[in-house]
Image: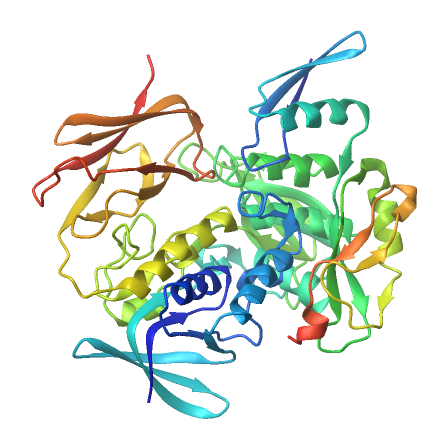
Length: 417
Length: 120
């Protein structure tokens, strides 16, 4: 059985960056990808805008991830494609992974594991759309796969439900390829996607965005023929009398992404109900020793640049893992946060460069993010605005704060007055 | 005064542009790129376009491409028409020029993946 210091599960932008970072620390690294090519979702994200932070360039998804793959091929990292992880067992201080691929079943041994399994789209079944079950109801990612990888158009005229970024990107993409996008319908009173995507994907092409609206029914036997949309009230319930039937041959769903944690579940790794990803400390180690998580499996990022950055932290720490006992303290947040990552700090690990990523629950203007240690204000950072679709981050040094396991760390979002 | 959302980076600054004679006054931009974007948007709006071209290769029926720079906004659909007539029959790589100086815009269309060379 082959033995590795670090086994990375997933060969998308997170996995590739994590493997690369672990290799740089001198670890032996093995990466497992279930698709035929490395690159993950970026293979089909052909639009540009990736890498503005990382490379100071506006790259397409394939360009961004292929740069990392090229780097990976220069390292000693071993990788396999078309391979699934079907089981992980912890035996003593080691993990035994069972893999399956065209050659059959094999096993490898790992000192540490990095989960870089990405996220999944919410489907029609998860948003409870009434009516028949015709063909023509796609997630935005499926529609994107059809257009950008298979070169086939999934729609002539479509309605988009949800204003997530992939939905907005697909509204523009389908319009460019000659389809009609009747409109984007968002159940919430504010859009879920980035403001710039509303501008450059919808406004540029005169595609209307209907806020506080949802799809209430679908029609059609073999193929989708029409959808019914309606306005919703503050409780997101459809308002009677506002229904409208729109003829279309496709309904595209962009209704959210959920971290993929089947492997984490099988290892009984505690998840954060806010992020739906693993609970981690600042080294991105989960609550199971030696298992790390990064990328969209940890929390859904809006920029791949942040995915790469987080994955490097996970990869590096996996390589440096020493089985030292942890001393964890919680990062508490007030109710104006949607979430914060990491959720815990291990004071036995380096605490001089802690990077937290967070989102606010609502649109907030001119606020301070304050960090309290044992009720003492430790640091404040001003934000001119916080919006749930736009992840923010903050770097801080806790090395001189005499932290103990009894210390309390709390993050608060406060109005500036 | 015109309100714009800057699309240069994910900050998505909300810009207010007003014309004072020949000059434009731009408010709300966190960086100089935002000011530049606002002025261009008022005088000569441009966009970068990313799409795919067909190939003769069965395993990769389409190849991702993009404009290496911005083209005038009103030429977007003319560009799409040209790109959709192209069929790639060579195993080109990332960065290779597919259409030089497309529509006399001074901008090239380039391949953005080496998947034809590396296989899928």
